Image: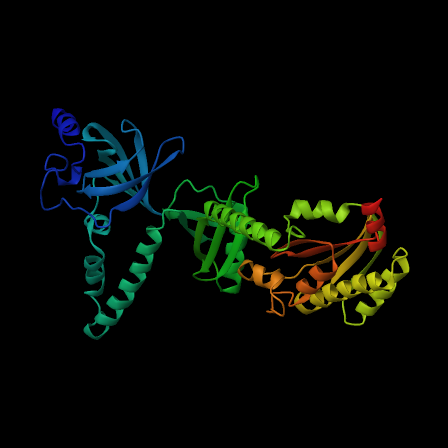
Length: 420
């Protein structure tokens, strides 16, 4: 007891596995590399992640935040689990000795790990693979050893993913294998995914949002056979949120730049702002564009409902509507439009459910004349910016919304107001 207390004060950074007092040296004292990840489960079902840093057949040196005074179960395999109890005064910080009280394997129990169980926990990857392949015919040893090492390497990579969780699925049941133990997955959705993967014998992937909307999970179902498979799950909430923050910052920069270049006449807006733009004023005409012949029909309908305007102004509004609808056909397979009376302006709104304009191409697509890509609107923006008094744009993976304002006050009336 005194030895560990003194060490904690004098050498707090010294690793317990280096100490001969922690688990005494001997032929059965081993330090697994990398440390073996396990779960300590208390009697009420609460689980604590842990790492086996050092062991022999009767003791485990564990790094864990579990209360040391408790008794726990460690499930090593489906039919093998170990009961352990902490030794409070042997170790320091979060590293302590846990005595093995009982080993349960199928229908029998023991007071210590068997040689096979010990080798599984203590042996290195190379040693285990060598031992397994040693009993094979000589001409098969190298081939089997190579394949086993490749599979073990994959497993070790998966075990190293601290943000993930690995589970085995068999006949509707899941068993935790490794990774982040406290990852609260939507198990009903995970089971549906695994059923599809095993039924179709192919990998399936889904991104699922938790019921409370607070978490986003990336789930991968990998079939083994028609009844079983592996589930690999990741909590990607932070990744998604980081991407959203970066996107917001990027869009803010583009918004400022485009507004400055156009003298404040062109605004990039978010979805909420665009919704207000779309609902403002009174609707006077609307329609859809699903094929090329819908464009002249849209112009005809629009002219019938336009207020009395000079012919040049009517032509400009109809031309911008044609350009916007042509872009929806080209990039989104069509869309819908409406015209609204908003105070002293006619607002033309065109929307689609296409892929949107890529952020990296946004400035060029909206400001550079004749610039065009599959995901851009070509030279249409420069034309619309020339004729319209004000433009609003919202674009993203779920579609694009464009609003164009055209003043209905004639140039002569503006001059009279200014001189009067």
